[in-house]
Length: 312
Image 1 (cartoon, rainbow, N blue to C red):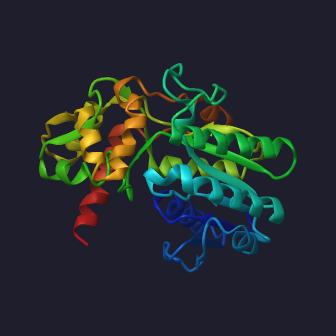
Image 2 (cartoon, rainbow, N blue to C red):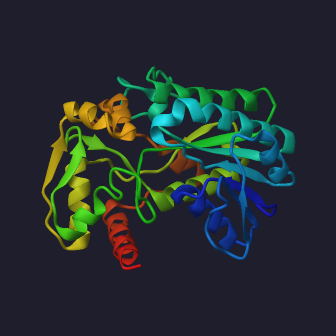
C-alpha cells in the first residue's frame, strides 16, 4: 500500500499496525486523544478525538486506509463505541479510504456453534456483544451499499509482546515469571482460543492490501485452542517456572465489580470462559496463505518481551 495510512489507537494492535507499515516504507498517522504512539521516522502522532468525524476526515484525506484499532474502557463500550464508530465510517466515506476494523468474537454471543465461523449469525444480546454486532453489521452494510470500502478482522483473547490489559497480560505474566499462583476466570480445562499479537497485526495488514478481503469479515489465524491451564503451562515452561492455576468464582465478580467496573463487566462474557471458545480461521488461512504462530513459539516470545519490559 503506497499511500499513507491512518491508525486510530496506539495500543498493541494500533502500534503494531503502524510500525509494520512504517517498516515497509509507508507513512503513517497515528491518532489518539493525547497524541501518543510508537516512535518511527515515518510515523506522525496526532492528538484528536476519535469521535470527531471532521477531525478524522481531515486526517484521512488522501490515505489509502483508515484502521480502527481503538479500544474504549471496557465498561464504557456501549456509550463510547457508537460515536467513535460513526465518526470513522464518516471519515472513510468522505475520504475514500478503506476502513479496516479490529473486531472480536463477542458479537456471536452465548450458545454459538463451535468453532465460530465468519458467516455465523451474530446473536449477542448483552450490552458489549450487541454493540460489537451492530458495528460489524453497519460496516458490512455500508460496504454493500457502496457508501464506503471496508473489512474487519476478528480476534480472540490477545497474548504476546506488548499485550498488557488482557487475561494473559499484566494480571498473569508477572506471576508466571515469578512462579506464583495465577487466578483466571471460569473453567481451566475447556479449550479457549488465543490470538497472538503479531498474527493479529499480520491479518489486519494483509486484508487491507488485498481486495478479496474487502466487504467481508475474517478470523485471525489462531493456534489450536488450548485450555487456560495449558496456555499458562506453556508460558511457565518458556519462563522456566512452575505455576499453579486457580479460578475466580463468578460470585467474586459481583463483589469486585462494586469497586472496579471493568471487572464487573466481565459477568456478561463469563460464558466465554466456562464453555469451549474456538474460532475457525480456515477461510483466512486458505485465502491469504496465513498461518498461526504455534503456542510454544508465541509463549517464548511473550516471556522474552515481558522480561525485557520489566527491566526498563
